[in-house]
Structure formats: structure tokens, C-alpha cells
Length: 166
Image (cartoon, rainbow, N blue to C red; front, side, top):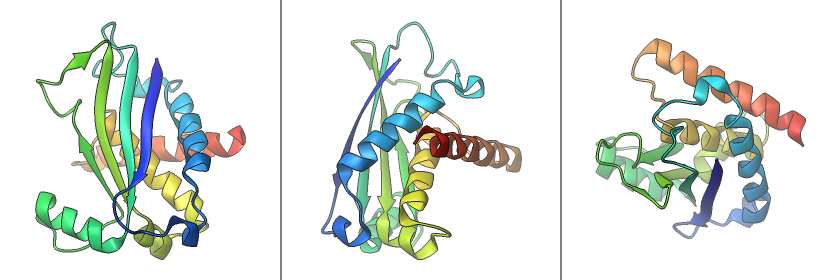
């Protein structure tokens, strides 16, 4: 399976201030996807079926003000958050496959929030949030504790493998 994704910023966030270059993240996200495509527990029928040979999604970077507005409008939570995922494919029984491509949705990352909550580097925090978002796009949610534990376990496995990749 192949993956195609776009990276963009959706407001006036200064990515250089955080030492973020889209080209560098593109390579790292490609590595994340390659790792994920080789983890048996992530190969669900939702995405991995004979009708799909390509997945696509978008990753957007923003500031706290923008993600606050999005969180308020779409999740009725009047505060900024670190990442919001809009899953278009796995959460919709009417999802469309066009030319064997599944459009999974969009991940929005607040770079400011990532910087505020980072335990190590901004890069590691942003990659953690993107990995978490991709897991949501693959159809994994965490409404229950066991599901949350699974998502966090997979996220940590992927990030450990990513460190060895580089």
C-alpha cells in the first residue's frame, strides 16, 4: 500500500521559530507510515482490503488560537488542544474509494501547544501527535480505557521504531 499526504499551515504560525521544516517532516511521516504498514495489529479490514491500494491524508500546523476555534466549533470544547483529527474514511460508512485511493482525513496540530507540553524536543512531541492522529485516521479510537491503552501502546512502538529508522 502506498501513502500520499500533504503538509501545510492553516494560519500565521511561524514554523521557523520552532525549527520545523515541512520537508523534514515529510520524510519522517513517510517513515511513520512505513512502520505502521508493517505492524500486524494495525492492519484492519477498514483500510487493508483488496479495494484500496493507496491512502491519502492531510497534516496541518497551526497556533493555539486556531485550534481553540476548531475545538470549540467541532467538539464544543472551549479551549485549545494539541491535536484534532477529522477522520473522513473510517468513521463514515459511506466513505468513497476513488481509483483505489481512500482519503482518510485531516490531522491538525497546534505547534504552540506541542511546544508547551513537550517532555523532550518539539520535534518528538509533534511526531507523537501526528502518529496519534494517523492512528485515529486508521480507525483506532480511545473512548474506552482498553482502546486508549492500545492506541498509546501502538504510538509508543511506532515512535521507538522511528528512532531506530533514523
